[in-house]
Length: 80
Image (cartoon, rainbow, N blue to C red; front, top):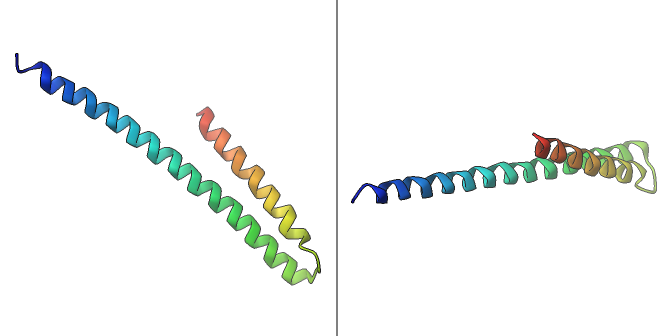
């Protein structure tokens, strides 16, 4: 009669591991998205400073491209 209890613990542990794996996967994906957007925006700011524009043209363009790129990578990871 003692055997079913350890199997229940094993099943619960497997479910917990799946939850932790999903949490790690999606939190890693979130950090990747933030990094893509931040690097693109930083590059736009640097290009605006080099070009000497009064309006942040490169910042706007590259930040939008960074957002679209981050969404693209997120969708590509979801499909896998």
